Length: 265
Ligand SMILES: [Zn+2]
Image 1 (cartoon, helix red, strand yellow):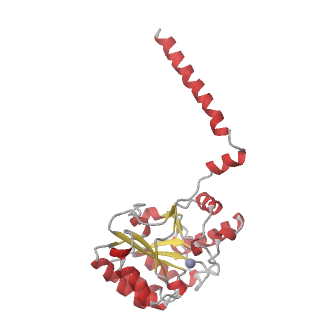
Image 2 (cartoon, rainbow, N blue to C red):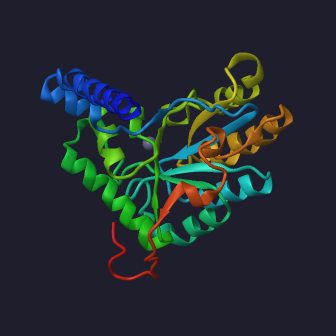
Image 3 (cartoon, rainbow, N blue to C red):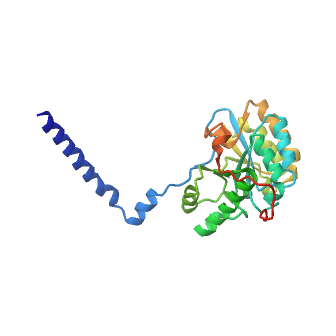
């Protein structure tokens, strides 16, 4: 009797499993593929209460050190989304990048040439990402796992390519300091000063390390102002609870090198 019951229930389970198959295969083959392809997650804001993440794009560039020193002095962490060859060549800033990495700031990819990734073929996007990954490997011995899309442009195809390459997240932002579109220092100051009254909290702020005023004027004022408001200034990964151990922000691949002839932009 027991055996019969078991047999019957097993048969029912198998029958149900078979019945469930057509429901997943009823979509067209292309739709099925789109649904199954993993896509990188896109984040627009922080989730950890009381945290803020200042992010800096388009570097490395000549004020990188000064910016990192300013963050270190204030006990704040920053997130840097680096290009390979934009304002500067990534290989020319290897020592600065190593210092930034060792100080516990987040380093992510922003493509090799600051390309609009929604305009690239899959192959060209792979190349844009691969060249930055190679530079990270040579300089740091790691592969970046976090990404910011240039111009904030990202689509399904790009999210699939990022997921294929192992990326864990793409960060957008909820506040823009406006430095890249020529906003004044006082405009950027307001973004930070008014945070507690005007803007949703916590937040993820877009800045660029390639503007002198951002590095020399805006950030030195913003850091103490945000701290006065009670914010904890952390990396984008920490403000989203994606890991407070920097070991999880990268894939450790080894192969860190001393400068050689292959370090070319
Ligand atoms: Zn950019």
